[in-house]
View (cartoon, rainbow, N blue to C red):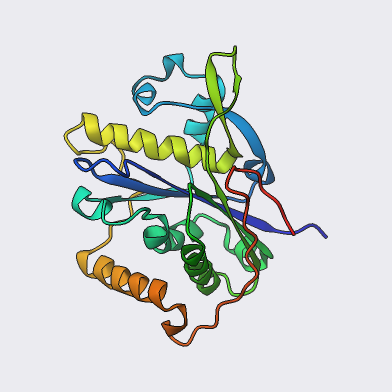
Length: 241
């Protein structure tokens, strides 16, 4: 009997820009092909203002990414306090993304794959694992990180590529597109359908909890961390042990 797998991917756009808000996005899929590694064209954010000159595969991935995704917006004054906000805000997105999975499939799932963009500290991956374990008590959980750095040129030799799972590429394009929408529309998005609003109270509670657990992972509600995470090498090649 084949496994029932659920795949999540998370990315952020705009981090490091002191004047702009940051978009943190997540996407979910139950399609095996969305978890497969591939070489995809690297797309600059400004190219997403008009898709006429982008490769067909990028246009299709962006279209596909408009389903089963969620995002939140972090103001610039909060966005640049930390090196990465993916793990800090991912739990808010997980709850919404779960609703996009058929309930019967969700109950029978025996594997949860999580793809993260960029370098994420091991201590933060441990905390994200805990967040996923709360939402998925039974399935095995596999968290992998990918740094989408330069790989060989493809598509006519003029455009560098990125190597990562298709699902991670999809949310990468979606967060970039949302950020461009914000920049060109006076901070007003055309489509708020995937937005997860986080109240100041909820954000403050999560931030304090997060900082506490980073300093002392054993302090969180007596939770004993399970050490069954598989980590990918930082160059983007996934593996299983």
